[in-house]
Amino acid sequence: MAEPEDEAVTAGQEAGLADDGDGADDGTDEMADVAAADEAGTGGEAGESGDAGEPGSSRPTVTDLEQESEIAADYIEGLLDVADLDGDIDMDVEGERAFVSVVGATLDELVGRRGEVLEALQELTRLAVHRQTGNRTRMMLDVGGYRQRRRAELAETGKDAADEVKRTGEPKRLWPMNPFERKVVHDAVAAAGLRSESEGEEPDRRVVVLPAD
Image (cartoon, rainbow, N blue to C red; front, side, top):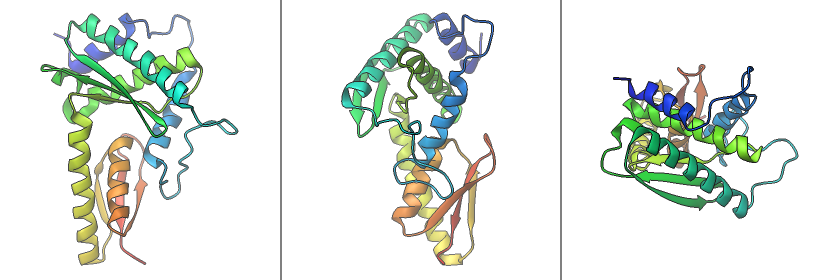
């Protein structure tokens, strides 16, 4: 039986995401840029840009984001059919980002350990949207409410780390996280009145909480 990660990628290929040409898809590098923008967000991160759009490009309209949601939902529905999984798909637009959520009773295999499969599915879905629209997308995919639960946990982690740094006066280095997780921690640290930054390279990039000047 295939591991969840392998099953997810195989499902993505069977659903039509695999490149039909001989060369690598040129959208991959752009998806890496979007991941960096995810971490920076609207609040920004020390030393990193929060602009998710291409230079000189206009911000996406509600119509653009609704189109992204529909494309993403269709793609995810195809994956569920290929994997023979049941799930309902909800679409929404919040701020300047499209959200697609899959809800169901047996979707743990689409989340994986520490959300690794979910992150892979999100990147595949973003690439599917990019191929149809020609534009980079920051759409977010959630499965079974995982991101909502994880956001609450990470916000508490950021707050606890900030409290420790205030008490000791020493920087606090956290464990490696993906861009979504780091963004939540950065926001929690900022809300606690301290600064934070990211160090290292993926997949070992992590948040460092800094003491007040």
